[in-house]
Image (cartoon, rainbow, N blue to C red; front, side, top):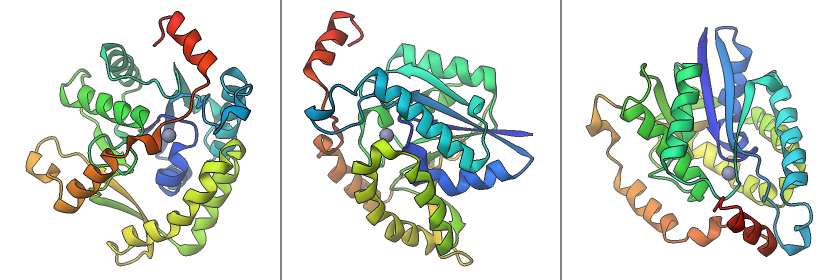
Amino acid sequence: MLKVIFFQAHPDDLEFYCGHLMHYLASKSQYIVKIASLTKGEFGLPGAQYDKFKGKVLAKIRTQEVVNALKLHGIPSQNIEFFGYIDGFVEFNRELVDHISNYLQKEKPAIIFAPEPLYTFYYHKDHINIGKAVFYVVFNQLIDFIPTLYFYSSLQSNFYFGFRKKDIQLTRKLIACHKTQAWLMSPLMMSYKPMMRLYGRKLRKWKYAEGYRRVFFHFPEKNKPSLFARILSHFFYSHPQWYQAKYPQNVLEKLKKSKKL
Ligand SMILES: [Zn+2]
């Protein structure tokens, strides 16, 4: 059995980027699919009018939403592990690196998927720091095995997983599980089809595809970004406000007092 671990910052992250590949792997008996969710997305609602739901209430709802989505893949709810970080405050530090390396040492996955930390169109701090930490752990051999590492949401894809046009229905179903995120997912869904079509052009047999970047540890020259990836990532990097969530003031103060910030 080959173990595959998907890291995500928030409960809905994998649906857009990895839904089809996860579905395929979960349907094959030779793979065991696990999900490492660093936060429960407890601040993922726009505007002050939702402040009373942010925190524990939203965390509980979103945990159920991701469990419902996993059911569509046939992945049991015990295969998801929540790391307990706070949505919007995942820092790249010793604690995160140790947490991830201990987890990977225990699980020993053959393949890892994580958010792209370098050449990405999604500059959310949580995403970037998780990708960085996973890379750091594998690159510095803090674990006693060498897994294959792929990044999703990358501008420098070099591996494609194809699917049919009618399979987009699966993505719609997965996204529908995340009811609290409809405000964000519905507009994003408009870009989904053209993006997957673009990736699909890389494959002969499939019209649509998910794009991933495999990290080549033994051939560093293969990791070099294209000019396109460099320019675009710089563009997204200069607009971090697009990815900043709005946190209720009282929560921020409480967190500061508890020294969690
Ligand atoms: Zn996210």
